[in-house]
Structure formats: C-alpha cells, structure tokens
Length: 215
Length: 226
Image 1: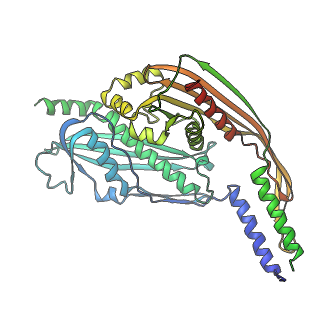
Image 2 (image 1 turned 90 degrees about the vertical axis):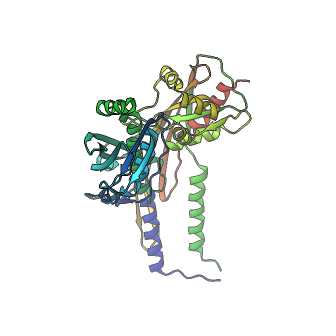
Image 3 (image 1 turned 45 degrees about the horizontal axis):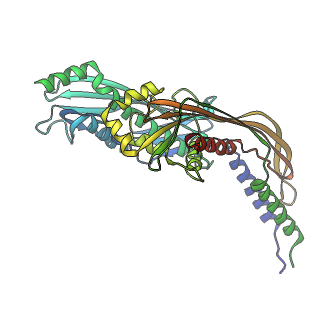
C-alpha cells in the first residue's frame, strides 16, 4: 500500500515533536493552580484535659491566594477548604475534647475557650526566582484564643513554611502544580507541627491552662 | 509498497528510542563504611529509611529515598522497610524538619516518651537509616539546536555534555541499643553526552541509580552480614 504524507502534515508533526522536546527539557512553566485538599495525621502527643471550641470563619473557609509572577504566569493556591481539617487534627490532639462551633454568638455549654484561626499573609516563591530548586510557600497564621467570657488569652502568630524540590516531580507539564501542592501541604503540616509542639508552651497559654486544670 | 522516507524516519526513531533506553555513559563508584557496633536483624523487625529534611539546605530527592527503600527490601538478604512518608506520618510531628532528632542522644530523649516508644515497638522498628546527599550536575557545556527543516522534517544539531555527581551518606541508628551502628557512603560520578546529527543520541550516566543500587546493597550487607 502506498501511503501519502502531505508537507503540511509533516510540518505539523515536526512542530509537535519540537514542542515535545522543548517541554521534555523542562522549559515550559506557565502558572499553576493548587486545589487538592490537604490531609495531616493527628499528632502523637499527650492532650490537656480541657474542652475547647474551634471556630472557622467563613472568610478563612473561602481563602484563596493568587499572585502573578512576571514571565511565569498566574499562581493560585486554594487554602480555605483544608483549614478545618488542619486545625481539627492539630487541636484535637492538644485538647482532650474539641467542639466545632458554628457561631461565636452562641457557644455550646461546657467549653473553656474558643480557638479562632485566621491567615494573615501568604507568599510563594518558584525556583526561577531563586538559585535553588525549590517551590516555597509561607503562610502566616494568627491563632486567637478567647476564654468563655470572651477575654483574649493570646493572639499567637504561627509562621508556617513548606517547600518542595522540583526534581521530585517528573512530569514537566504538571510539575509546577504538583510541587506547589506539596509545598503548600508542607507549610500546613509545619503549622500543625508548631501547634502540637509549641502551643501549650506559650507562657500565656501555659498559665491559663494551669489555672484551668488546677481549679 | 512502503514509502522509503517513512521507513527511514521509523528506523531513526527506533534507533533514538533504543539509544535512550540502552546507551549509558560510564559511572565510577566510591564507597566507604564505618562500623561502630555489631548489627543484626530479626525477620519480623523493620528498618525505616528516612531523608534528612531541612528548611534551609538542599535535601535528598524523594526518588532516591524510594529507590533505596525498594532495593533494600528485595534480594537474598533483603530486610523489611518502612518508607519515609509512612514513618513520619505514624510519628507525626516528631520527625518533621523542625523537630526531627539530630543525633542518637536526641533520639533517646524521644524514646523516653511513652507514646513514641509504644509506636516504635508496635511498628517493630529496629534501625533508623538517615540518608543525606543529592545528585548535582557540574561542568555543563555545549549547545544543541533543533529546527524544522525544509519539508517539515525536524532535525537537531550540536553536542551537549555534563558531569553528574551523586553523593549520599547513610547513618544507622540502632533503636534497641540506643547507639549509632555505623555510617555508609556511596559516591557515583559520570559524564553524560548528547551528540546530535539530525537525531539526538543521549548517552546518560545514571549516577543516582548506581548510587542507589550500591548504597542499598551496602545497607543490607551491613545490617545482616551473614
């Protein structure tokens, strides 16, 4: 059978092959969108015998970070959907009981205080902006604790950081999204680590908890 | 009848694909071992292969950790391995970049916490193997240009070459004895090159794969010398 290949077809095929080579060499990077929901294990720590409430505001639930990087496109990180999971996991290990509260106006009976987290600032960095190979994400949290009389115990600032090595992701087309997802997950994991590790060591929190558990 | 041009294109493509899979540059390996204590492992005990993660330094590639975990668990003297991700999740948050023990004394302090000791016993972790190191390219040179020639045929011309070095070190902590059992290292170096006359023919020195195979074999022999 005699096959015919038109010059137009050959030119298109040639262009596609060259495009594949260019992408294969890792040149294409045009933004990323992180939407995957984050999961973190429950910390392996001893809990304090106190019942606390957790309030996730509508603003935090809907939080999305967007930025444009010159010549590299638009980067979007969805943060809100994962916040309830993050703070539930972390604080349910810190305290013996954690109750999700829907409104600050009507708190359930029996809770000693309410945890009110928010995101103060988010930043990201891509490898093209640095000498290294890492996608980095910074999330600055504010974690307010108020007691059952609405008195503020602490406004604790948690600077969380996560990064991911671009060489850990082999598909060049999907690499920015995958690496940025990992960097965001590592940042939120870092926040959970700091909550589990340092929250009860904060002097204001320690004194308040000592008062509660001894009364 | 087969079109001669298409047959030639198919042949060249096949050659290029074969080149990618079969041809490799030369790799030289240097290994070192320091033994601080006797070792051994029961059939129901496992080792955890962990990568040192830092917030401010280069860290070992996940693919290398996965490779060592896989290759250490197979073969005649293979041992059961718990992967980095599974281990750090099970012991969260004690092996995170900002909390992981830096030496065996730190580890002993962790072991004094009942929750952690119980988890390690439950998982039957006998050794923790900390892997540090990276693969880096140096002395990169040459150029390679590709274009669509007359008639729509893509063609590349030029020559690329680079030197790659994969340097990895493994430190073994014996959890039962509370001591550092030893250190192993594997260093693989090799030069890769890609000559191109119409079709690029890559000769890749797979230094990381060689370092992984070598370090995994050393680990198995070190843990269970018999």
